[in-house]
Amino acid sequence: MTDSLVNLMDLDPDTLKDFVVAHGEKPFRATQLLKWIYQWGVVNFDEMTNIKKETRALLKEISYIHAPEIVSEQKSSDGTIKWAMDIGDGQLVETVFIPEKERNTLCISTQVGCPIKCAFCRTGKSGFNRNLKVSEIIGQVWRAASRVGFSQNQEQKPISNVVMMGMGEPLLNVQNVLSVVKLLLSDNAFALSKRRVTISTAGVVPTINKIAGKVDVALALSLHAPNDELRNELVPINQKFPLKDLLAAVRNYVDNSNANCGRVTIEYVLLDHVNDSMDQAHELAQLLKDLPCKINLIPFNPHEESEFKRPSNSRIDRFYKVLVEQYGFTVVTRTTRGDDIAAACGQLAGQVKDRRLKEQMAAAERLHEQSIAAHIDTKSLV
Image (tube, rainbow, N blue to C red; front, side, top):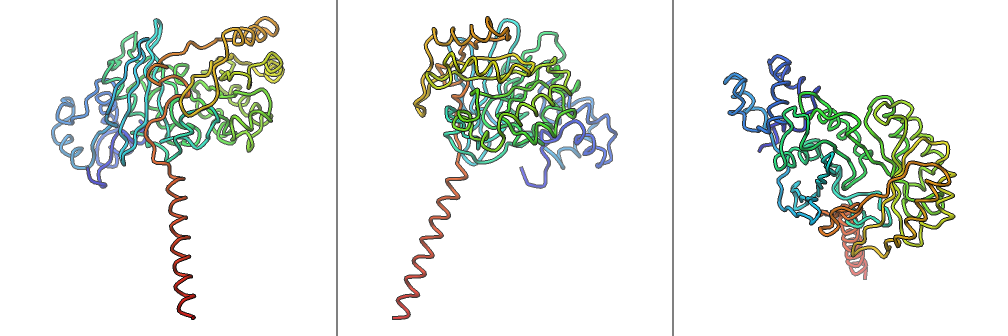
C-alpha cells in the first residue's frame, strides 16, 4: 500500500462519513462500509455488492482496508486463545480471547509495550515503542472476529465484551482509543453495549477528568496498593498523580457515567507478602470507603521477568474475607485464565523494540563520536 491511500480502519464512524462526503459520495456510503467491514468481515471492495461499481472503483483508488495480521495462535487448556499480531517493523502485540458460559471477552492492546512500568507487569519489562493506530487496535477485534465469528446482529455475540487491558496504557493513547470506542459501540459496526466495553487505566488523572461526561463506557482502575508509599513503588505513575487526586478523578468519571452503574471496578493484583496482609486489607477498605466500587482481586500470575510471587490461597481468602465480611464490599477473586500460554493478566509481552533503548544507544553513539572528535582536535593541536 502507498502512503497516499487511507486505511478505512483508521476512520471512526464520523471521520468515515466525512471521508466519503469529501469524495463526492452520500453519507449513507459510510454506513454501508461500516456494515461490510465490521458486521460481515468483508475487506474486498469488489464483494460489496450494494455499492455501485463506480464507487467501488473510486474506493480502490483512494483507500484500502487492512488489520494487523495474526502471526501466531496459542490455545490454553481452559479454552483461552492468545494471538500475536504483526504491526510492522518486526513488532508484535498480543490479544487474548476468553470464552465463558455467559460471555466471550476480548482483551486488546493499545500500545506497543507500555511506558507505565508497573513493577509486577511483564509488558512494562518489554519497554515501549509507540501508540497503536486506530486500525491496529480495532483491527485486533476484527481479526479475532474473523476467527470466532462476526456479530451480524445476533443476540449471542461471538465477542460480547471488549476490555482494553492488554499491552499499554489506554489513556496515554486517548484519541485513538476514543475512535475505537465509537466503532465498538456503533450500531453499524460491532454494536456492543457501553457496559460491555471497558477502559482500564493505571491512573492518568488529567485524561480521566477530560473524558468524564464525554465518553460513557465502563472504567476499571488498576490500583494494586492501599497507600501512596507502596503504590509509588508498584505503579510509578502514582508519583505524579497520587491517590487523593486519582480517586477524585475516578469519582468524577463515575458520577458522569451510566455505563458504570454508579461504581468503578478496582483491579488489585495480590502479591505475596507485598500488598496482601490483613492490615493492608483494612487500609484498602478505608481508602475506598467513600468510593462506590466493586473489587477484583487478581492473584499474581508469575512470569520469568519478575521476582514477585502468588500468595497462598489462605492469604487470598483472608484478604477477601476482610473486605466482604467486615466492610461489605462486592469482591470477586478472579480465576486465572490462560496462564499456561502466558495470556493471563500481567503476562503479555509481545515483541517490542524499546524506543527508550534506541534513544539511549543513539545518545551513547553521539557521545562516542564526540569523544573521537575531541581526541582528533587535541592531536591536531599538538
